[in-house]
Image 1 (tube, helix red, strand yellow):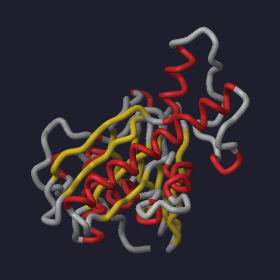
Image 2: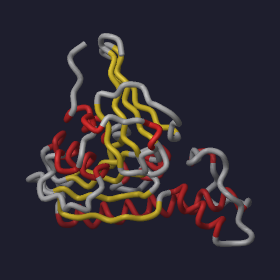
Image 3: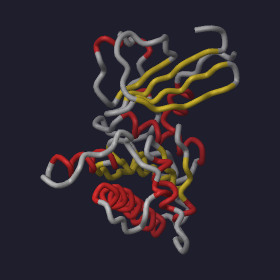
Length: 236
């Protein structure tokens, strides 16, 4: 890497999440797993499978016990620990973080920075694949993992679009219900949405007449921001 360049990698269950810094500019992007040796990394963490051919240096790996989220149980995925800690670090207030990946996770962190629990449900792509695999008449999802909901009708007439709308709006409804429950007990709880599918879900959480929808703040690179903060690169 040249001066001012650095890369961080968070390995998910189906996608890899990258942060790349060149000078003062930082870019986040998501993509499929890569094959073969990887470029030099400042740091990496993994919740998904690690390909042996990647040749990732063990000394650069960030593990769960190195994420300063208080009272984290040993079974907690490092992706949830990273986003929960980063959200609390940013606002120093109770946070409910929805990480919309292969699994959509909800992670609650209280105002003292302690892990208090959460929920897990199948993410959008996983639900679509399950419907296609478990039936004879439903088609497999298209090439893209998640569609843009703005181009879909509320009540589609095609099977594929009905699957897409049903899953996305079902996930959005689950997020809205969780937000309502948390806000009933903690009115000051911040609602944070992140993950590779977060941008597709966010518009569905800001529907007219939904007092909670606009409260969800979209932070696409939250886990990578935590990884960068815990394993910073030298100043460019």
